[in-house]
Image 1 (cartoon, rainbow, N blue to C red):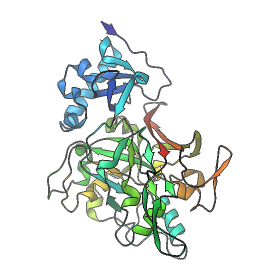
Image 2: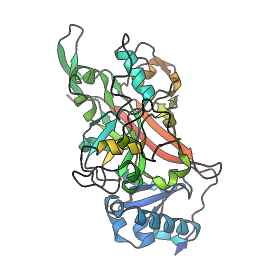
Image 3: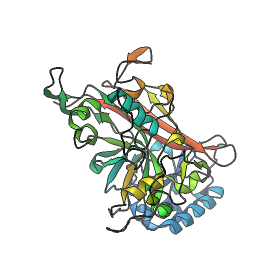
Image 4: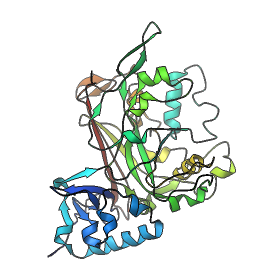
Length: 391
């Protein structure tokens, strides 16, 4: 039995998009699929290829760009024609899982607006940007084991926090925050000791996905000097269930903002482009911010080149994220510490004055980018609800 998928003209998930995910129909095992409209195509059934019967994209991604292009072309042919009926499932009737097996996770700090805002908050009498910020993409290694798929509940973390007397206490975070980010998924890894040239970005990175890197600001404030983020960041990072392939974002490429002073040679090359992606942050159903990825100072290729510049190896499934995406305007800030200016300027959410996350709060981050013609494509969503701390 064959079926044809009717794709609405106004969908953000048309044939120019085709994001990949891992899903399971009711009572069946997880396998790889592609979203089209409000349907999911089972690629193992549609393409009769066992690599897509696995509960992860890793094996497919490791095959490299030529295979990625071949499969994308074949899927577009199938979408334009007929598919086996058993290969098509309604989106609302399936479960989703983390789409990749993540070996390493790196979080960057690539937004000049976000870095400037935090510099002004934390160092009001000094230059907001530290001396190294314009010379290299600042980042840190996160905890891959606590990256969870969108929709996973987030338990409020415990940690040490500084009390008004200056001594620490241990308890649940009271300044729990979000960070609206864009993640990049490595498809083809690199060998130890062999840096990835900036112009080889597209040979290694498979696609992008929305990220919410939850942050306990009070825990982080006490622990991060002198070594950097630790328990204030490692408790949870949410990743979208859908990975948008780089090929779907060709029309979203834009020039990078001017970088001054000039970067060192390994950060130049021809990959001087960013992405015109518009995010939206929804707090308990109310849209509170519209962070623009187009404002990011450091490019995806520069982040990858710097990540491996010392010879660090990468593996299929590795994830690196942009850091908080913010713009220059108050309604473009991608974290609540910025939106509420450190808690001093509460945000009105559904009629209530709010600063940081309370138990029961739900945050949803969505995004879209230019597609072909006047159409736009969607990057799905990353969703999470806060649960009270254990103990």
